[in-house]
Each structure stands twice: as structure tokens, then as C-alpha cells.
Image 1 (cartoon, one colour):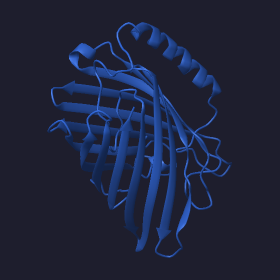
Image 2: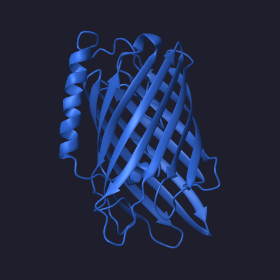
Image 3: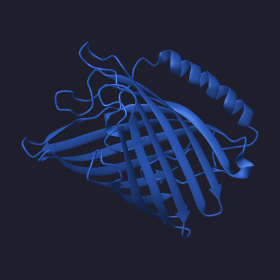
Length: 279
């Protein structure tokens, strides 16, 4: 769901039993909420952050451009990526999302390489039990597909990954607070590859300055839980702005600049730009 370095390397495994279970759960949730919600976004609904994600199931198309640059041990790595995200809400409490990223990267000592990164499919659920208090609780799972190129170091052509997540949203007047926590579990590694699980998290604070302009302060990070880099944590700060061009059609543009807050880092600078179109 995000265009950061870690998100561009998502991978997913065997999904059939889990998808079947989650669709069964979504049917129950939809039946429970059917009398209270519809597709017109009535009730509690959140705007989309830039680095993070909205906890509200929605129907939209989003196009992202991302740039990161890092220098370590006198060697530089620059990455450019574009991502197409399409989400369809079957009901205000359930949506399916498809992410298709493509990435270019160049080292100071090597030529520029490019490849399709790991495509992912996400299932997102929302619970409106506390909507009257401005609180939205959610959960879901992402399934990554090994559509990358391991030889180029862009995604993977064999590793697959489950990424279950929990999310929280709070809305009061012009302020929206959103948080996501994800647990990345890789599978289908080769015999010489270690199992590296990660805890990923985002927090977004969004404020509506007016009908069209929004300001954001976002944090994102990850902690490696197992493997050779176990215990290493990165944490980043990203201020940003969003502007909505047309009230009726919900066309919006957003941009943010990311800066690392920890000594261990995935980039020295990150720029994200997004175009959102809601249906």
C-alpha cells in the first residue's frame, strides 16, 4: 500500500485458504453493517494520507511516483518508482486493492536497471461499531506475488509473503489520525536464504485547512524481528500537502518529503508524489 523502499519489495505466498477465510469473515461483516452504510461514503470516512493508507474501504485509482537516494560506504544508490493502485469497495466495510509497482535503480558503480517489482493484492475490512465516537477499527491482509527480478535486486522472483495488518482511525472536526501495524512473513525461500520477518508501522496526522487543502505529518518505520539484521529499526518523518482540484469528482494531488530519524536508514532523502481519483 506504500511506496517506501520496504513496501516496494513486498512478496506473497500460498493464499487460497486464507482468502477463503477472509471472504467468509467479510460476508458476516457486510451483513451486519448493511442497514447502516452504503457506497456514498455516508458516515465515518477518512481522507487518504500519502505515506500511509486510509482505514476506510474505498473505490479509487491512485498513481504514485517515488524517489529515494542513499549513500553508504562511499557507494550511492538512487531509486525511482511508479506505482498504480486500484481499490474497489464492495461495501463500506470491505474492499480489495491491487498494487502494481515498477522501479528503476542506479548504483554509482553500475548501470541503471529496471524491473516490475512485487505486485500485491490486499483485502481490507472496517468495523464501524465506534463510528459515533469518530473511531474506525480495521484489519486485513496483503498477499504479494513474486513478480520482481532477484538478479537485479528489485523485488523477488520466488519469495512470497503474507502481510496481515491492523489499523485504527480517529476523526474529530478537521483532524484525522490514522495508524497501521503490519507483520510481514516471507515464505518459499531457497535453502540458502534466511527467514526475515518484519514489523512495519505508520502513523498519519492529517488536518483540513479548508475544503481543498490538507496538511499532513506522517511517520513510518520498520523493525526486523528475525534474521541476520534482527533488532534493527528505521523510523522516518514525512511532512506533506494534499490539494483537491474538483469537489465533485474527488481529484486530488499530494506530495511529501521523507527524512530519516534513526542512524540505521533506508534512504537519505525520499520524495513521494501521488494523484488520487475517487469514484
